[in-house]
Image 1 (cartoon, rainbow, N blue to C red):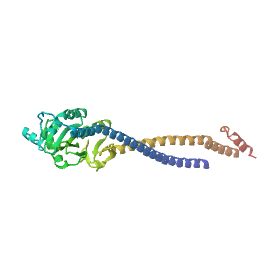
Image 2: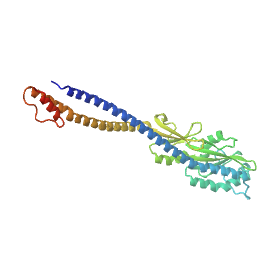
Image 3: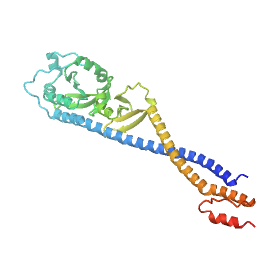
Image 4: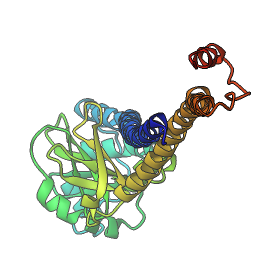
Amino acid sequence: MQNPATSDFQRNLRIALVFILLLSVGAAFIHFLLTLDQRMTRQAKQLELKALQLDIQLAPLLKLGEWLQQQALSHSPIIPALPLTLYNRDGQTLTEADAQQRASAVERSFLQVNTGAFNASRLLYPWLERVLYTSDSGFIYLQPQQLSLLQIQALSPWLAGNLSADNKVALSKSDDNKLIFSTPLKFTSGETGRLLFVVDIPALLQPLQKVTPEADFLLLDESGQILGGTVAASSQLEQRLLQLQRIGQQPLSLVMLEQRHGLISEGMAGFLGYWFGYLFVLAAALLAFFYRYKQKVLQPLQRLGIHIERLARNQGGVRHIPGGWEEMFDKITRLKP
């Protein structure tokens, strides 16, 4: 005769194993979601710190533009004026006669006095590629002078479409992954122009990418247009995970791009690790419980059944009684007529 306690034990063990399997999957999934949320929060905090770093890098450049604007309003020409190499908007060098005709003494004197500041800013900020002054009278001054024709020709589309008469600091992009900060200058004698700071965007973002080599970075303007970055704008950006952070008070935003498949594969590995960990712990606890139940309850009940069968056949019962069951076996023995 099959013991009903044994059948119930086996059925409960199967149910418990299924329950443990489902519980471990649920716990691993919740753990995975919490870990993913913590990772995204940590990355958002890191991106915020990176944006703060960029804000600190660019703030002195804007302060320099404001200071030069103040200097232009209070500048007096130096007599005599020294020769100065100037260019037209096609990148051609102006003759001395053309330079004197287009550039006033105040403008030439201002540029001569501040050439040292232009060069020093390029030394202090390696990502600052070039400093230009473009006058509304039609000449251009730039530092450094090397490859001036190519540099001005590269900026000619910007010069043709972005010169305006407003008095605001503006930024825009050029076609070769450069960011252009433009500051208006107005002199006491009435001359006007704009001071251009040409920033190499990959060089500006290089320190950020060194810290996070698995990610790429982009700069966006206020309208969300891509200004440039460490990855080509034509690449498949929709297949990457995007996080965005505003850069201080400036009209710029920093975007960090990560590979989606990397996040998914890492997440699946983490999920499987959590699942097997929970499954092992819960299954070990379950088997330990059922093993103790079998040793302390099920086997004594089986032993009691054998004891009763032997008493019914006048065989004197079993000799070895499980610990803790002596009173039960003794009462069963005394029940025999």
